[in-house]
Length: 111
Length: 119
Image (cartoon, rainbow over the protein chains, first blue to last red):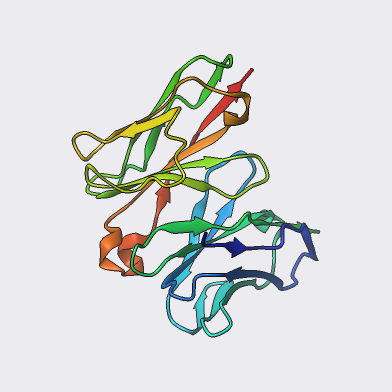
């Protein structure tokens, strides 16, 4: 059973701070990695994807991938109260491309 | 571009009854996914279709759940008979083509979901 692990939180940060969300995965052959944001009562929406080791930046968001250590992280700079949501990490296994989601990390950004 | 459509949005049934959910993916998307999301958990993949063929259904409780995508476009998920533990949000998602291995085409887009309550 391929696993994707996330700390359920909640992670509480003050407005303007950097929020750091982490995800580890068990399938060493995984190739594609996604971060989704899910507001309460809503469906997940894509924030960004990454498939190469290193960093990928998109606005206030930076995804970091380290395949050797089997972890992927999401940094949110200048956190805003509107960023308060659950952040889901999703991993596509190599070869079969079957997606596995983590349970999500709840982020609370307080004014 | 229209998003993934799902209906109904909400459904309340009693245990042992049957229920069906419908999903229409984004036009041109070959891959369709059904997920079950229980409160406080991440989405759990139930079944994945590529066009009208099944890619994976290893986590689908086949004694009570069934799904089809007959013409390779829209899909239905059925539960018969429902149990209390089936109370969850059922999410449908689609992607352009998961087989390419390129993240630009295997990115999933989710519909609004169907919230099922089994009493």
